[in-house]
Amino acid sequence: MKKLNLKRIFIYFFLFVVMFLSLSVVAIPNYSVGKVKINIYSDKNETLQLFYTQGKGNFNFDEPHSLNAEVSTSKNKTFKDISIVFPQEAQELRIDFGSESGINFSITSLEILKGNKKCFFSSEELSSLINSQEIKLNQIVVSENNGFINFRTEGNDSYILLTLDYLEPINNIYYFITAFFIAFVFLIVIYKFVYLEDVYLLAKSVFNDRKLLLSLALNDFKVKFAGSYFGILWAFVQPICTILIFWFVFTFGLKSSPVSDVPFALWLTAGIVPWFFFSDAWSSATNCFMEYSYLVKKVVFKIDILPLVKILSAFFVHLFFVAFLVGLYTINGVFPALRMVGIFYYMICMIVLIIGISFITASVVIFFRDLTQIINIILQIMMWLTPIMWDINILPIKLIKFFKLNPMFYIVQGYRNCMIGSEPVFPSFSQTIYFWFIIAFLFFAGISLFRRLKVHFADVL
Image (tube, rainbow, N blue to C red):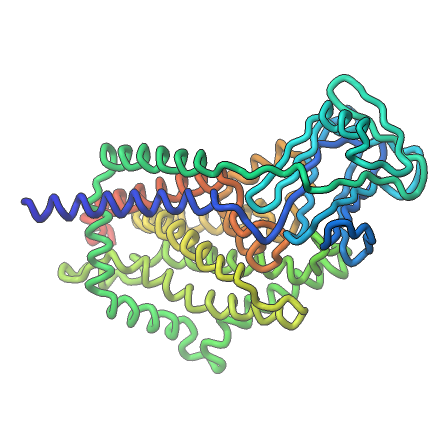
């Protein structure tokens, strides 16, 4: 009895540490990039251009050191948040407002983040700094209004010039305290409502039968294409053909332009590679108990590992495509960097997500066979609801918040951030909390549901 208590204490402690570290990791500042965030409205569709210098006092701004963001007008004068990410080494910033005179830009706030420092300017603070000439203007007329400041361009080279002297260190202790509190509350919920023995038994089965798991996964991978002339090559040919078709249609048919100055083919591939793994692993793991019904009916065989067999089988293909992704980026001049290691974090996120939903659907599909067709439809819908082939920034802010509720958005965006490098590797603190809450709920719900239904599997099959 004492031994069991020590085990349970260790498991709860381990869960707490994992949750705390998972939530805390995004509180660590990203030192590779900075960000300018502007709440803005324009009376004409225009392009904001952000120039940056790499040495203080060097005001020779040029096109290679510039970034763009589109500002679109709206009928009801709606202000929108525009974010532009710039390299960490930048010292001065110049924001160009369009390329012609007579355009009105209204700004309510301006925020700059760089490493572990940030500064927030309200419209009143911006007006004060402009009046004191601490923010320099060129070909711009400024007028104050109720709650915002208006910039009217008076030429084809209208801009404001900012230094980064105002940035102040961020106190990250609040993020870590929040992470500690949320992890503790979540642990209490697990203790009260989750039968942790289910998770422990699954982990024990995986560890004890790890050789069998690997052997079955390799065999499953080979059997899929047994008898075909090209064998396992078909596992890679079909996804590559899918990528080429989407690239051709969107690039030449729909005339898709580069996204965030990244060629569309690279941007698309970084998003579709994780989707291939998610789609293949979930759909195949759902049918694992029916496919291996002869093993399910054996009393001595631990069927807990069968969904993991399918997931691991799909993971072999995914590793190839991650290598393919890195190679594709290298050929196009984006060489491997330390930030790409973050892909392994998002792999873990996706595997935990797939395990959770696979145990749910694999347990239910035995009693409701139509679920297989429903999942196929869900995958088709999810593929288009997830911003894989389209940029989420084209949507209004309210809709963006809705689409971010999709857990696969977090993973797809994470893969892109690791590969492209124009955004921080880890997304916002709040979104990471939301993501881990959702997948932890699905994971524990899936394991618990499987434990309660598996005694009936042999009878139904």
